[in-house]
Image (cartoon, rainbow, N blue to C red):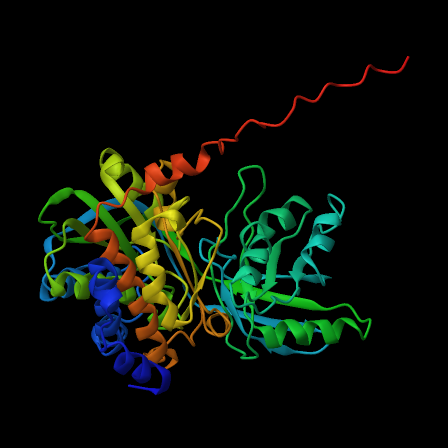
Length: 481
């Protein structure tokens, strides 16, 4: 155990009279302290990294991950462990290359974007139309990129809350179609990354129905900056790109397991992370960590004593290519009214710095017990309600299921995310344990109380009653003509 985590554990052993009078807070703090010294989460990530590795949805490795997930949940004591299959379009990466052919030869480090169509076997070659910002691309006139390869080199901003990534999603997601609308034959985008590695970062694109599908790839940060420098020389730049990707119908699998409730088994607390990953790395932080945090927290709470409500863990099978959300929502739509809460962890393995609770929850005594337990973990309690938790649970959140948003520090996360650098060595066990402790304290309280987040949200929407003035009546002066 390290530093302030060890100090927190020692200090928490002393129980005050006030704490003894609040069994929910006492249980939350006990769950928190167990998590700080437990290795379940790290062991989970180590195993998925080594025993499964990269696991693109629809691949042979994804089937191996499915079987691994079932075995892992059963070994941890989850019940009703089962697999939920759903149809997907599986995308597979083939040989890839890119190079500058003029004004002088230069190899480029790239990764095809998930879902990209392939180039012809001989590749495509064209003059570069370079845009320093995505807005510059959008400002280009229709037809102005005919026969060219569009390149966007706008950098991503490093932020603690991940907002820099959200701001840069359109260049990757929509950029290929926007370039195609203007006549481009291929598209390259600077990796959505904050580091200075030459490892490119992949991610999914979303072709639009009204635009041609053109091959698209992510450039490493280093190579995007190289092209920026080359453009200052004034000579035309030409690039040859080869992508040999393929796609076809396949099956995705979400693995589900329960810790049954003793008093209200039909009331569900649903938490999880996504099991699929991109192929360059081992998917240790994206989203081995998310699975590990929620599985370990649920396991630790269940191991203390059987919860009153059922805790359900879901290992979502195809998040990266956007298939899990609709499939999980459709499969569990009938259960939505019985879901007390739903939450997903999908932002890495570093310490949680902030949390957003469901609307109106901060006024509840049960959540006051949670906030007391979280205080020593140095977590900011946001006054804003959680509007989402992760893409895999978005459909059920839209259906009215209350959600929570634990927000890990992403300052380091986007140095490695979606790249060959997403590996086990990036996991800091102490920071990981802190996040597990936060989730554990929260899950304990929700699973062992009758807290009603829907009622809290309705109460928060009611207008505040005001008292009529009791002083002398005020007579308005007659209006002036």
